[in-house]
Length: 331
Ligand SMILES: NC(=O)c1ccc[n+]([C@@H]2O[C@H](COP(=O)([O-])OP(=O)(O)OC[C@H]3O[C@@H](n4cnc5c(N)ncnc54)[C@H](OP(=O)(O)O)[C@@H]3O)[C@@H](O)[C@H]2O)c1
Ligand SMILES: *[C@@H]1O[C@H](CO)[C@@H](O)[C@H](O)[C@H]1NC(C)=O
Picture: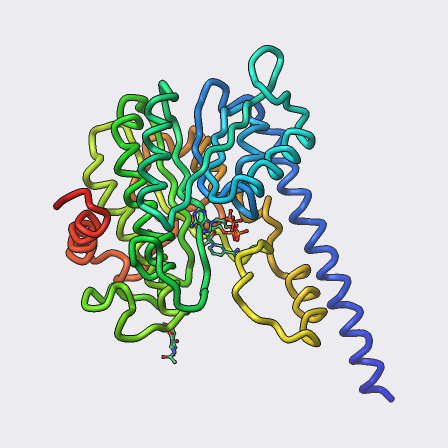
């Protein structure tokens, strides 16, 4: 009897704590929104994967700060739908200019195709006089073994190589627009990765968790090597982990039907909302506090320490050189 009562009380108390935690964090996010209005006036931002999850939340907030946002997405239909919703939510007009706060554009970019990356960049270079912020946000998580159009393992190809080519092709425009910023969305799971140069396309052996971690480790090594190359140019590059966030990222993970309600409850209680998860991306894109900071790793809007595997500059350089060859920047 007593044991049941204690268990019940504990469950009730725990539930109340969870609810309090939800409302507490939602309040914190609201405050940061109102504090920053107008910060991005006159600035152009490209966000990859902006139709969903963190990218969509980042786009919404930067629009609130009056940026001109280019949503770089692989599926035009999904992107236009997200853009329509964002315009309605934020009260933007569809063509920008005049009284409009912020401006939203959709452009096609499939990071699993080097041809698509090249044509996206060509259009941007033709149409955009400046680029202030590039946010490499799109990502694919623990899919079954698949290859990109160019024959790369999908997670390494999209999360690392596609963004590698994208960034390199836009670097001239970013330099001409300096001071400008590049932001890379990685993950804490980088720590289970390793850059196994003998099998970057996982042809000998595929482990989907390892491949995701490897791609997120590559994001960090890329950031540090790029920061070194960009010293003195006025272009900064930083990398972040968003925490665990309720998004569509887990689409390739199978959760048994009966476990779904439990999973939903846990994710509602413990995972961040997309807007909470996007705070560090938004901070790195627009806060004056990090204007001169480059080559650093952030979580919850603060610099964090990296493990030695992510600070191995020799591996970082070798990865850069091999990536250049893989995407055809060097022949
Ligand atoms: N959610 C988390 O807990 C978490 C934790 C750590 C790190 N992250 C990182 O956060 C980033 C954003 O993920 P999310 O959680 O917001 O997931 P999400 O809701 O699934 O959004 C991912 C975005 O990437 C896009 N994308 C996937 N493949 C692409 C391709 N080949 N070309 C262009 N775009 C592509 C998706 O487009 P479609 O909608 O068309 O598929 C979608 O817009 C990822 O880099 C992820 O690794 C997330
Ligand atoms: C796959 O990789 C993960 C992370 O690197 C590791 O923990 C796990 O043991 C690996 N699984 C197999 C079957 O090798």
